[in-house]
Length: 310
Image: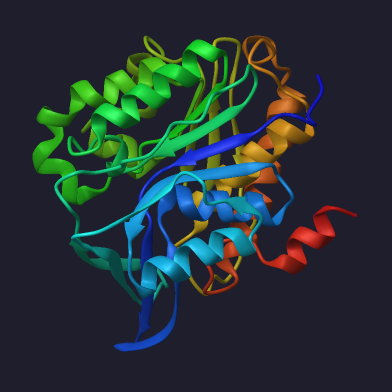
């Protein structure tokens, strides 16, 4: 298929991350789960646009400029009045995994934006609590439904944190709505453990496959599992000494989407993809994820992107 007109859209929260190590700030940069994924894709030359909101303040200006500097359209970013850009303080532990404190001040009216028009085989990336948040849910759901109707590939990362466990029973209906609209679901073993407590992964896939037949499960530094109608398998993850794991899952998503485009995989191809193509896409995703873990940034480096294009 022709990739030249194909576009990747991401929708999600935009936030400014300040990273702490040993109680002291070491760096800061724009972030957000889908945001991180889209920045990596923009650096790698993918035709992309990010859909989000941020404040009409200095941090908001930094974020919009950062999108543009990384080859992404800011056309669908609403800079709102009556609130402030969101901040996240990320405290790295001895394993360089992060614990977060969030500071948010949103206006009552959210996501006042125009929605893009999707074409067949475009790609939409979405996920995290943003995709479950009732304050923005009507617009998010409408966007996903439009992408689904147009024949876009929809890639969903639930990124379901332990902090949302008390609300699981209230959110499960919205999670299932997202599953039903998705082409590929990628989550960590922790995510699925929070969504389906006490269930083995095979049983989890049995639940999810009622709604979406393609599941990717990442198990931190040990392995990546693929579950489809035709096969299931595990791929090893190379051992590294990470500086930060903050953007690891987001960068895995970017690598997988990049590989979808590189392999010219369209919506009609996915049900019958070979194990070899799945392996190539997963290994590309692992390479992206490993690259990000070696720095304090949440996205692949420009140097990595340049090497990729050679």
